[in-house]
Each structure stands twice: as structure tokens, then as C-alpha cells.
Image (cartoon, rainbow, N blue to C red):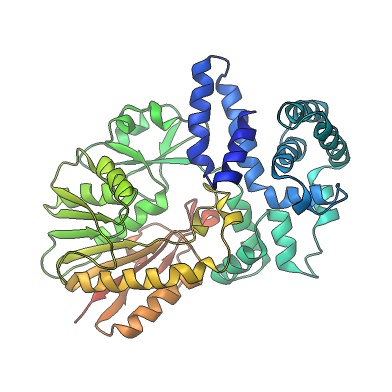
Length: 448
């Protein structure tokens, strides 16, 4: 029931599972009839169903006598939960069918429960590999559509990721498979407030791969149970995001290094790391976020920072600060989020190609603001959690053509030890190569 409620919230309210599921789990625990195993199962059902939605839709479509668009969304959600139990877990067939049909009786009624039972009986005749052979077009005939069905991504997303990644079939299959894997929880020890040594004393904690401030939690690790996280001295932050902040902080400068800006600071993860790094050098961070409620999240993330900082609510395309004010500027711009599909699997089904047209003017405007805001000799970091070329290199190339007083820096030496960073000078991280979100970073120095 809890997993069904979460899926309905995702469908009806465009909610994100990582936001709606924790309160539901907490409420269930407070009632006293829900333990850790129940929570783990509910989490797997929600995220597994969302990740494999495209594949499961193709399977369900082969088992019903009408187009899927004519199946009521609540019925489709119940069916998808049942199909995931049958094809994506080790739950015995009879238990998966019985539990799903009982759920259908409670939330849909007896008539629809019979329909659910009939469909699941058909699905149970084959395993996942056999179903893929039946519903996915052959790779040789349509590679992108084949990969879309097999790895449960919209076709346009497969095409965009493949264009950005380059290479042959093996690489894109590894990337799409990584998008469907459960991501590790990664912590950041905020400098001057916590250490990795402290975090590594926690059960199931292991060092990060690339960031000196990263600690990974093995499956089942609960960040909220860690004292440093509760106190804000450490936080949950993907290692790719940490690397972006560290690269900007370590980029070479000539002259002063006392004023830093995070121009799109919400919800505050990178700002908190930058503020801590700035404090170690006697610098001050200004964290700016357009949306007031997100600015509040930034203020919460920075609370207790050992050095001075300021948080404001301001539009980054019409900034209140004077041009040439800052030595270092980070612009982690709004984007499609295609680089974080491991953590937000529902985003792949919400985004449309036309969304790129809406983000393009904003991304270019924010990068222009960043270049205007930094002093001559200062450095701008343009970052985005998307590998789509229209949100990464195309933006940087277009803005630099209009801004001759700027040059790209090679970001790769600022990520020491990180392999497979390409030809540069910009950097694209990948889930299957680096174990991070698909973060993009270009470093630009203002020269005139």
C-alpha cells in the first residue's frame, strides 16, 4: 500500500520519490507496524518500478487488449508494482501475484482486481530476459529503440546520452545500466567542521573514490543516524558535486582570492562545501538563490560555517552586486537533470526534448552574468547535472563567442586521480566510469 501511495504521488502531483517516500516510511514506523525489512521492500518497489517503467510498460502492453493510454493510471501503477515483483525481484510468483491482487481489491475494487490478476498471470509466463526478447526491437534494426526498451529510458534520452558519450554500443549500454543501479549514499565532511576520519568510524562507511572529503555508505547505511550529519557538520552530497566545487576552489588565480560567489546556490550542498573551503583561506562566500524557499535551504546548509558568509535571494540574471566583484564564481545552472537519473528515475519520464529550449536562454544568461561578475584574472565554473550537449558545450561555446575576453582552462588537472576525463579542457563525469552523477564542468578565466 505504501509503495502504491508513493507512485500515485509521483504520477498525480509530479512529486519526486526521494521527497515523498521518506515521510510515508516515517509515518508507517510511527504506527509501529513497519520494520526495517518492510521499509527496504517498499523502497525497492518504488524505485525499481520507476526505473524500469519503460520496460514494464512494454511488457504490460503485450498482455492487455487495449492501448496503455486507455488503462487508468491507478490500475497501471498497481500492475507495474506487480510486474516489478515478478520480473525484478526474487519474490516467489504466487506471492507477488497474490499480494498485488489483494492491493488491487483494496484500492481499485473487485472488478479491476480480476483484470490485474489476469494480466499478471500472463506476465508470469516468462522471465525478464524472455520478455525483452519479445517486446524489444532487434538492435540491428533500431539500436536506439532497442536500448530504450531494454534499459528503460525514453528514446530521445538514449540518443542524447549516446551523442554526448560517443563510442560504440558497449559504452552506452554500461551508462544506461548504471542509471538503473541503486546509487550509493555519499557523505561530505565539511572542512573545519568534520573529518573523513570521524565519518569512517561509522558502521558501513568506506572512503570516497576521488574527493578527499567523501565517505561512502554501504547499502543500508542511514545518514540521518550519523551525529555529524544531524549537526550539519557533514552532509549528503554526490562525489561529482564535491569535485566540481573543489576544482573551482583550486583553480589557479593571479591576485586576490577573498570574494567567492555561488550564483545558483540552492539547495546548498556545493555552497556549504565552498563556504568551508573559503573560510580556510580567509575568503567570504556570497550564496545567491532566486527562490526564497530554496535560499532558506541554503542558509540552513551553511549554518555553523566557521567563517563569514552571506545568503541572499536574488535573480542570477539580474544580480544586485556590481560587475567584477568576485575572484571565483560558481554557476551550477538549472537543467534537465539527465545526469541524476540514478537518484531521480522519474525525471526521465517527465522531461521532453522541448524542455531544452526553455533552459537554453537561462543557462546562457547565467553564464554571461558569471563572466560579468568575476574580476579580470578571476575564474568562473559553469556546471550542470546534465551531460546533454545542448546544456554543456553548446552553452559554453556560444557564450564565449560573444565574450572574447575569456578563455577556457583545462579542468582535468584539478581532478587529480580521476580517470577517463576525455580530451578536455572541460570535464564530463559519468555514472558508469566514475560512480558519480553525470556532472559537467567548464572553467573559464576572464582575461579582459
